[in-house]
Image 1 (cartoon, rainbow, N blue to C red):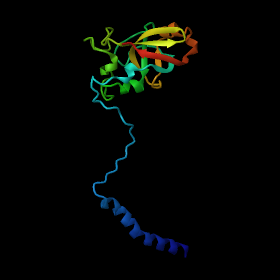
Image 2: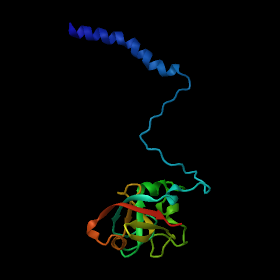
Image 3: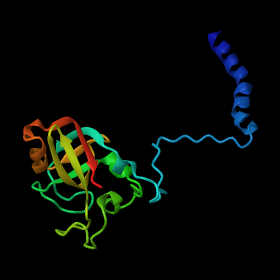
Image 4: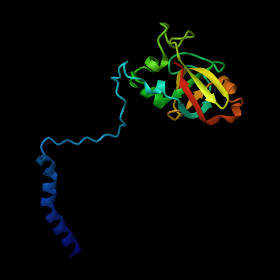
Length: 181
C-alpha cells in the first residue's frame, strides 16, 4: 500500500517537474554562468595607472630560503642579498599574465638582453628595503614565494642574518618593506 502511495505521488509530481524544467525558457535573455575560478586581475593596466604594489608599504612576515634559479630566470646563491615576493603579488603584478613565461613578468625588471637561466643576469631586478626594529636591508626581487601571504617577503640566509641576526628564528612577524623608487 505504501509503495502505491509513493508511486501515485511521484506520478502527480511529473507535470510540476516538467513546468519547472521549462521555466528558464520563459525568461528571455537570461543567462547564469557558474565558475569555480577566482577572478584574475585585468591585464589592460596602462602605464598611467599607479601600481599599488610599488607605492605601498607592505607589512607581513619575513622568512629565509635557499637561493638558486629564481622565477625571473636569474641564478643567485645564498650569499646574495635577494628576495622573493608572494606568489599572489607576483601573479597579480600589473602587465603580467600568469599563463605566460614567469621570466617576462614586469616585476623582474627590464631585460638585459642576456638569455635567462645562465650565469649572466637576464633582468635588472627591482630593489626593496626591508625594515625590522632598528635594522634595515636592501634586497633585489628575483623570485616568487609559493608559501608566502600577500605582503610577506622571503629573503636569502645572508639577508636574513643581516636583518634579524639568527637563522634559527626562521620567521619574524610584522616586518615592513617597500619597493625602492
